Length: 294
Length: 210
Image (cartoon, rainbow over all chains, first blue to last red):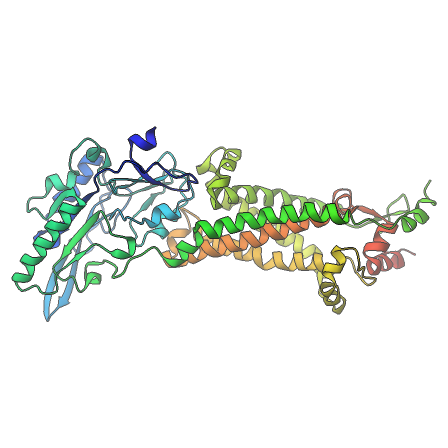
């Protein structure tokens, strides 16, 4: 029942197929980078709602603070200074989990049910199931999950699954003063993104683009990038996808073939024994020695 | 080298036996915990280790224990596992040997099958250690790039698979060859057994004796 009522589409390290008859609305968060002023209200709202407090660090000479995502910082404003078209551009990116349709974390995870994908598109970690192996971290094409050393659990943005489940929008959305962040159905958000894109192009930003990478079959947090021809400038990979190494390593077929071969060795042993029997010292050789025994 | 009883020959001294079974116990521990993380079909095995998180914690520690136990053991037996021309001939007749149609008269302390087992384990355990370090959370893995960790994960699984299959063959061969388990448990074999399975070794130990 919980699988149905929670609308779970996909569950890590699971051999059964979750029920899929009922489809809920796919949700998405749109981040329109052209409207972002880098105020970090979303970052503060994330800490506030999730009750997280990162360590107070030191200034590293840039606005990005803390310097990286962590088990306490699931949302981080990253500030990139880039030379584009002969001018200095200050590119601000709200970094965090993108909730891929094909999540590398879920594929890598060996613990049943530690990573869940809801049918609304949210990818969520279940701490009580997490074994702390960190495979999700190397499985992620965006380098998002962070392992907490103290409890060996992995943390990342939940897209406020607790809020979304009761019909609220994620905390970051609520805090954004410039409507750079929007939340709704994936369909509506794509419409809005393309509307914003047209607007940007009219204003001369011909290279603007929507970043909803097809390599991971789209994401449930996606961007409008004013310099969409250079996603790397924002720290985003150009063609993200689950690494072929990870795909091979965690492939159902490859692992099933491995398990099958191990069973085959067992069966081969039984069959060999049935056909040929044990390898014993020939009786006449054994006998001649036994005679001398006291 | 012979036992007090006269007709029994000491094949594995007590230190070697203890080292072998210590390696074996740690291997089984690693095998079961590794399988649980390899495929969800086996995840129930994690309950043998408390639960998943503790199993994940203990697996790499057992891995280091395996390395610390295996290589000193290997150092004790490697000399008898040196490859000789006769071994290549044995490998050619391996299928015949399994069908009991071929029996080598020039086998030393270990036959070529045992030597292959030994020499495959030497690099594979080293590879499992190195790839395992790259995966070891939370202490060592963060020092490696995600790409390296992905490759390490794949190689770790492949090496473990080869090891499991190799040990599976090893177990069966030990069971199939009557007297082999006893040799590794109690250390001794009969003269007839030594003469039949390892004639060259038999001559070596008896020549020294008399």
